[in-house]
Image (cartoon, rainbow, N blue to C red; front, top):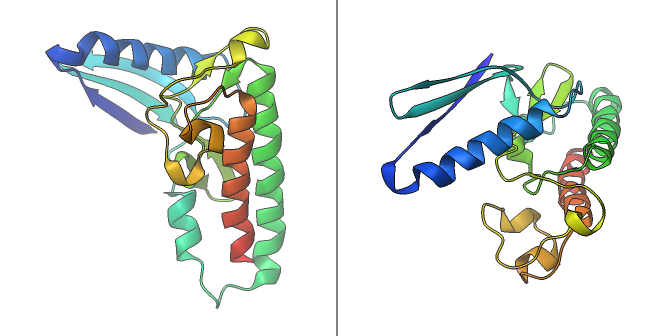
Length: 177
């Protein structure tokens, strides 16, 4: 198991608590082998913790950085092809269950053996219906390198922004081959 802990400060406690409750609600609404699951949550004084499964060996960014020219492409290719399919179908699953991740990047994808898992749903948004799937205005908590142009421009955005971010991740995966 892995533990994600956040310290609650008086000045931002309400806002942080809402974000934590949103993340818990989003994760619990989706049971999928390629999405982290919650084992339990607890609070000690000003620290709130979420215990998650699985405990990963690395995030995808670190894993990709560890691959070098000596790693045989013939060994990596089938695994990476599998991961590409898993990431794409899992994103479709999320969107089908009314969830936008909003922060897809290699740091938020975990690697455990040959398994790959989406994590960090702190920026996620649950939506019902196509109109509710869109947001606009300032986007906080995103990583510019993986952000769709409409996110950077603070324009109206929807699930296609997640697809763009996943495309950036897939480009990094393919570059290892």
